[in-house]
Length: 120
Image (cartoon, rainbow, N blue to C red; front, top):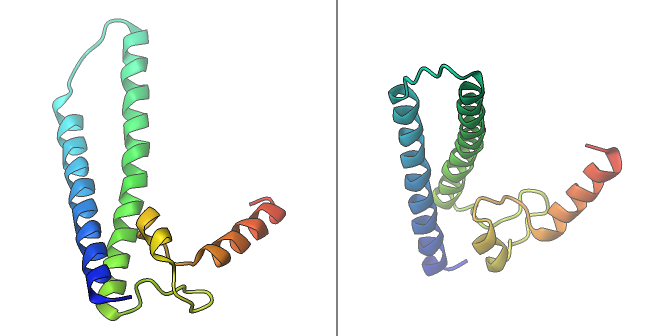
């Protein structure tokens, strides 16, 4: 992978990290600001359901933040774009679709087929 490609992915990952971190801040402030007291149990249940849904989304984003940080570390140490399973290069197209990936499409396909066979 050339320097221009690495710079592209580094910028992309930094931008994505900033977006995710800003969402996290919004969630915290949104959760602490809401002090509604609903007389109707259905309204209260709807609020709780919405909060749970938002927390699940933020949990997934938290996991993605970790992956983005690890991808940035791989850029720094020179292992970005190299499959952790077979050591081959990961295609640019795959990295554009999922810049946090650590496996080439062949290895990931084999892993998913194995998991499916085991029922994981």
